[in-house]
Image (cartoon, rainbow, N blue to C red; front, side, top):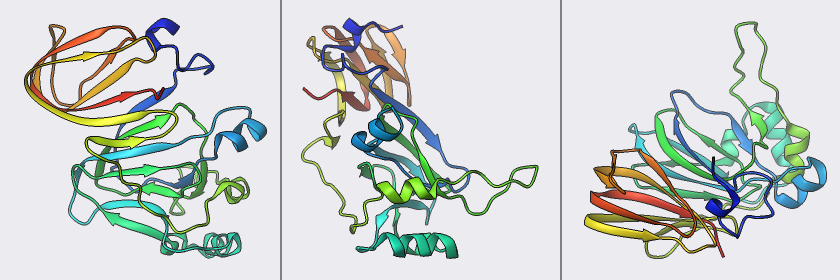
Amino acid sequence: VATKEDIGSIPSSFPMFPVLIKLIDAGSNLSVQVHPSDSYALKNENQFGKTEMWHVLEADKGCGLYVGLKQDYTKVDIEKALKEGHILDLLNFFEVKAGDTYFIPSGTIHAIGKGVTLIEIQQSSTLTYRLYDYDRVDKNGKKRELHIEKALKVIDTNKYKKIEFENNCIGSCKYFSSYRNSFNGEEEIENDETSFSSITFLEGEGLVNDIPYKKLDTFFIPANKKAALKGNGIYILTKLVK
């Protein structure tokens, strides 16, 4: 179990580990959802909101992601589309390929489509408001719970603008920054006392501090520690923002 010293001095006010990193393999269309901001969530749910990002690992031809609104809409427009079952018509659909990245601030409607495998890096929170689930039912004929009333209070109704980052940075906000790096041979990652690093290998094989790694392995490097990489590959490094 990581100690506060391992995590670093930045997230000392967080009640839980500050970042979650997930591997998601969508065998079916995942639900359309939105996450609230910290200010709304802390006031109304007594927990943090959620900002996140997606980095695509694989995608079948024609498959993609729903991210944000095609244009400015009113909440009345969105509520009407939900009631009539055509909320997807209001959303951007981006056909994706390996290496594509989408940054998703709180308030952005989003969904992962069938046939997409990606890494999700997010602010540590479980708070999700589900808007649409394709009218699916469970074995008892019951639909999943939706949270439309809450969602309408937090949705960003403005046209989505894709956020681009410079150099090897693929996503950055006040919660975390992530970088896509490649190497061949030897490399050292050194953390100061403010933050840990997490590295997830997208390709390659070798050793991290003499521990073998392969594709999709993830390593936690404590604050104020070093990691010696030997081998080759591409990895995503995530750390907290000073």
